Image (cartoon, rainbow, N blue to C red; front, side, top):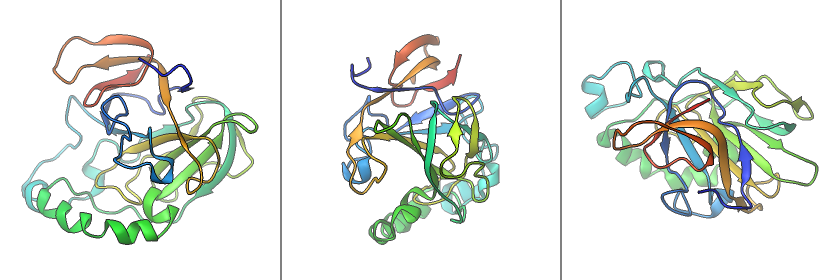
Amino acid sequence: MADPGAVVLQLPFRGTWRVENSPARRVPSHGTHLFATTYAIDFTAVRGRRTATTRDWRSLLGTEPVDRFVAFGQPVLAPAAGRVVSVHDGEPDGVARRSQAARVPYALTQASRARGGAGALAGNHVVLELEPGGAHVVLAHLREGSLQVRPGDPVTVGQQLAECGNSGNSTQPHVHVQAMDAADPFTARGLPLAFRDHRAWPRDGGPPVVVPLGVPAEGAVVEPV
């Protein structure tokens, strides 16, 4: 079910993606209200149910190159029509960390990344204003050097904005989406969001359903229709 006041979006990608940190599971979805992430949602591209094409000793014990992940380099699309308010580029795409051995030391540096500002957290990102004085949407963790828009540009729904990357506070390539009531995530409040016209495969492996409007469930695999 979607909140009656939710910001309605299209999925910002093509193909099949798995849902992580969904506000359908809990609010705040990322464990905090900071940086307007109250209702944020993450998507990781999958082939079948796998996020990467390779699994080896590094998947269990170390870090991995990002180009083995299905999401890396995939087009990131405008989820609604609007205007580009701000962009941030120049943050490098870090290595991926599927293993607990690699994630633990990374988690210990979380506080220092939070002090590093929006670039250290969101990495390369785009902020869209959907209507004058209205909701704003952030698409984050984009691939370095892939941004195709500049502040002030009008965008149409489905227009490519950038590519999926692994910049900022990210352990594997994914797209982070959040809606908020102002352009600055340090002062804005998070807003509920919902996605129209998508197909969802439940986490338990049940048959897919077409969803006219809703918030994708944690662990579901979704694609636009």
